[in-house]
Length: 312
Image 1 (cartoon, helix red, strand yellow):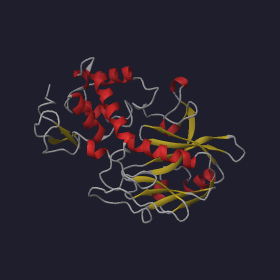
Image 2 (image 1 turned 135 degrees about the vertical axis):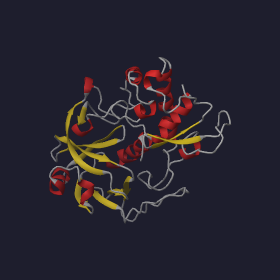
Image 3 (image 1 turned 45 degrees about the horizontal axis):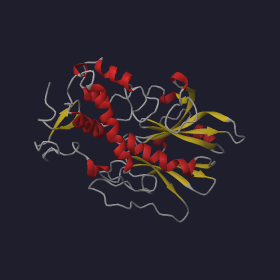
Image 4 (image 1 turned 120 degrees about the vertical axis):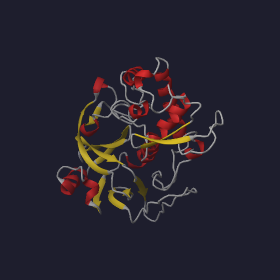
């Protein structure tokens, strides 16, 4: 599943090519991609066709576009997008191709034509395709609410209005309004395994399996350490490590193991080459040389160094 850096790469690719554009048509090839839309395809078409996209915003792994009516007034709702396990948002223009331009690792590729589920046609002739091989993601509209504290709702937001369907999502570590001290206190107040806490999107959003393993390795903390066992310096250090690894991933386009994650032009990210823990089972730890291990914990794989990340 794409995590925060991958979704932010997509948001940055969409911003200059969709903001200010008007939706001229909606094409639905797979109704299951609209499963979250109240009123189904007819309601989505009524909300979108003729509307102008005024901003594209991200909080954690959620993306949304702010919508304006043809006369320019705010529509009071947003177009939500969630990529799920294999979703992509791909831009195309007449006569252009969107083939991946870098060599990809083994894995299932998502055919941008066969797996195209929903398309938005824009007034400049471009087409925005929602491509989803496994059909776990989707598009839908959600009414806007005031975000907590009256501060910007997310990265790219013009104001504090937040879609209702994203109101339960905590701020992420790349959000300037994120309260790292508050998040650290939340981690230390619970006895659940720290990795499970990092993956809890109501505590801190955007972190998935890849970046949780990388942050825990960087902070020398074992995946099953109870949150309450973290010291007052450890919890903030772990969050800083998570923020650092995601910022570095963002600089190189995110992490691509296969063509299920690509940016809006069909290109994959390079950060898989810089991973220290995730997917490194059986390889020497980059820090101490001990053989890295992988275990199943809470139905997820956890990669760690048994020497650097000892049980406490």
